[in-house]
Length: 356
Image (cartoon, rainbow, N blue to C red):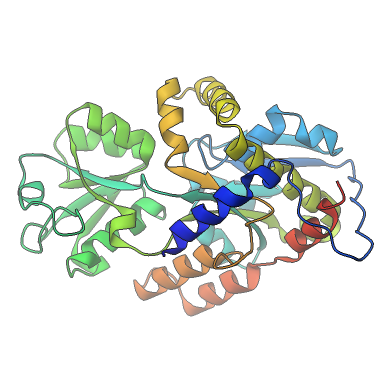
């Protein structure tokens, strides 16, 4: 059984309990829920499934119930912008994607929570009449061949899961990261360039995959077909903020995972809250798009985070070592990522949340 399937099996058995965002208490006297400091907390995130739990908690009033004063700042779909805002000390907490590994490599932050879990949907698309797709699928359903991919050009945003997906795909056919061209374009620019004839393939997330499919382009691979490592989004915090306001960090995590649990237990409300937010943020979404997203993206809860095969920060460690192997970060960067992972906050939340 793969880790991904193991997680979903565990999740299915725990979601009823998770809907209350509680864990079992111990025989000892439970810890008390901390009090908020009253300081404003600015959360930088992405206006999609990555940031949805942070927004859901805001929309449903969980922060207010916990005494937190929270502002959500959205950075579209560009995790590098979240990194820049954190570096400029404009945000206290970040809920972001794989680009977080570069922020963590600086040694300036604490990694405090695992976020969205990708079930599938990080894909590569091509053209039905080109040699890559015409090579046909292999036994794993992956299209392409070493010959067809020689000198390939793949479009997509650098320093994201799109680039990792491209590297994993090319490695699947025996090519190193320096043996093909990855053209750095944000998702919307990459889409426009690809549809105008540029590039051989494009690496996209579910939003842009839907646009490509509607326009007649074809999927050649899903990340889950070429890699055994699950993609897990990040929750990290300014080290100074964590040291000065640990109670606020714990309360944020409590609200965040309460939102995750409620979304998993109540898909109708997840869809309603997500659709309104996405549309308000200017995304071209229909209700069915969000319903489809529910099958592609799952979430950790207090019952499943930092548990079993999913130890906190496992994907960030993997991503750092993956980038090191491809000569995109240094050994010092990798050490900083490993040192940033701090499960003390989630451990504390688990200790007192059972009393709620």
